[in-house]
Length: 116
Length: 114
Image (tube, each protein chain N blue to C red):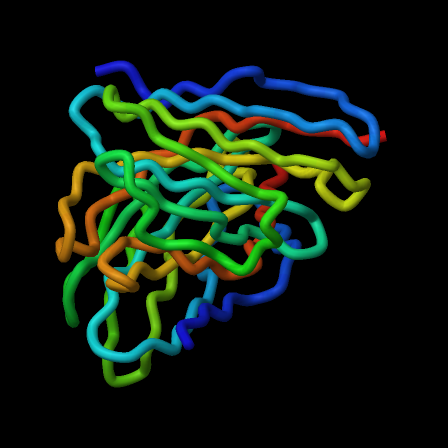
């Protein structure tokens, strides 16, 4: 099976712009989660989607949003970019169903966002 | 809330040395525990996992045992190689709001030298 793919791999934006990142999960996986990785804060959970519904959200401002499509592909959007949004954004997919925790999350290579 | 604490790095070892990276956790109930590895410029790769007490996860010579009594999941390898140089993350997952969220430790950088 192909792994989790993320596009683009690298992105440079300026403050105030918005950005959309894309994630395609492993075939058959219906859950997609997003994480932000920075040197200062480490790996932080953004949100999780299952069957086009957001069922878990981390502690991030409303500028961070996401969605999932019927084919399980997911996008996340960051509006009004700030310098502090520079990070590696990782997407992960898993096969678990509601109430079924502990399933392994498989990560993509990430999108490295630089905000100038 | 849930949290994971792992030893500070960087850890520098000579090739063929024994490796231990400590990881302890705080969580209600019975979380699943994971070790992920991140090579430079890449995403996270699952190294091993354990889903219940006393389970031992193993892969590529690495091992970790789920110890509920000490709330620990220490990573070990008997003989490290230069190719093991990477950042290692301990993580737990716990049912939250009907979903599956990973909580990570801060990561431990391992450098293996010849």
